[in-house]
Amino acid sequence: MKADQLEVKILENRQLMGELAARTVAEKIRELLHSKEEINIIFASAPSQNEFLTGLLEEKDIDWKRVNAFHMDEYADLPGDAPQSFGYFLKVRLFDKIPLKSIHYLNGNAADLDAECSRYATLLTQYPTDIVCLGIGENCHLAFNDPHVAFFEDPLIVKQVELDLACRQQQVNDGCFATLDLVPTNALTVTIPALLKSGFAFCIVPGEKKADAIYHTIEDDIQELYPSTILRTHPNAVLFIDKASAGRLEQTSSFVQA
Image (cartoon, rainbow, N blue to C red; front, side):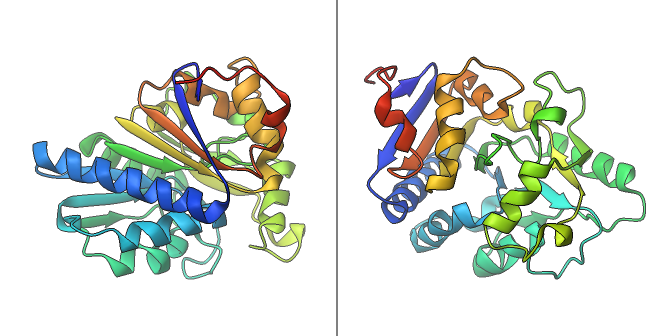
């Protein structure tokens, strides 16, 4: 199935979805390492990525020592070792388990957050993104680009943002925080144009709570109100969803068979 340029793969359940996404990303990593000395990957941090990350660890014959790893967002003023920290999430689930060439963390506790954004932007410029592995939020955000700060022509590479209510509520829905008042209100994020500059984009979005977001992503006009719609303009993007997140698509006929 395709939606504009976006290839869409619907799997029976989130386990099969994660496994297929892992195989697909692993194949692309191997392919790129045949022609490049090293590659650069941005990873997402969320429970939606769990099956994918587990599957990626099970893939063989990946020369991780030639891979530089980044992540796409981080809370401001949350302790770096807090279990909700996005850097920590990836550290314990992936980065500590493979021999990466380098790992670059966004520091949401930097004394000067604007300077931290500039530092990370410089790194992303030095290491152009080959692959981005991302999710879609319940409010259709990409990284922490919620609709009110999702600018398709954003001049920045990394920026500070204030999180909207739907985004913060999702963190509670995902079980990351017990109550809304515990969810940070601000964060750092890689911007949408920076994410879309990746050579290849692989988007993993399971679960019934994401059904509305997937519907908007596929069915609505490409617009900043639904940031994830921009994925339909990427020439090498694949969206992996399960039956639950595809739930509202069953009532539509707008897919074109690839």
